[in-house]
Amino acid sequence: MDAVTAILEQLGVNSIAEMEVNESYTIEVDGYDDLTIEKVGEDRVSVGHYHISRGDLMSDPEVVFVVDTGEWKAVRYTQHPLVHKYDESGLELSNFVTVWTRNLRNQGFVGAAEQRME
Image 1 (cartoon, rainbow, N blue to C red):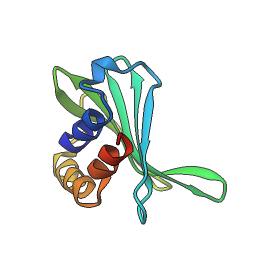
Image 2: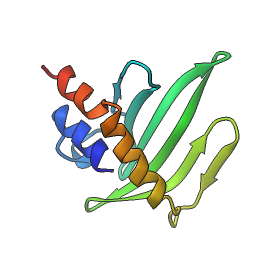
Image 3: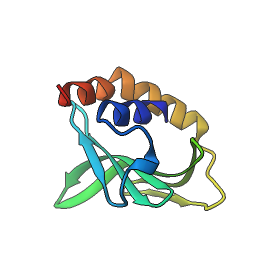
């Protein structure tokens, strides 16, 4: 997730290891659901777009990654209300993650993180 890494670097976070568990960052870009990056375990990071629907927090999508020595392995995928996949050995999401990373850049999330720090 090089776009997420770039966003974190814009916010002064050079590696996931620097983050505390439960530390999170939310980036807003007009016209898109907010993007939240949260360290949810010693080696786990949640990356998701979120919105409120009928009073409930919905993800579209949220992916939890195990981050080990710079490699990001997707272990959980949720897209409310219909999809939830979990496999501790890893989910095959490489095509999705490639497109999502490109979209995060094209939609302005990396730039929004940079502007947030100015």
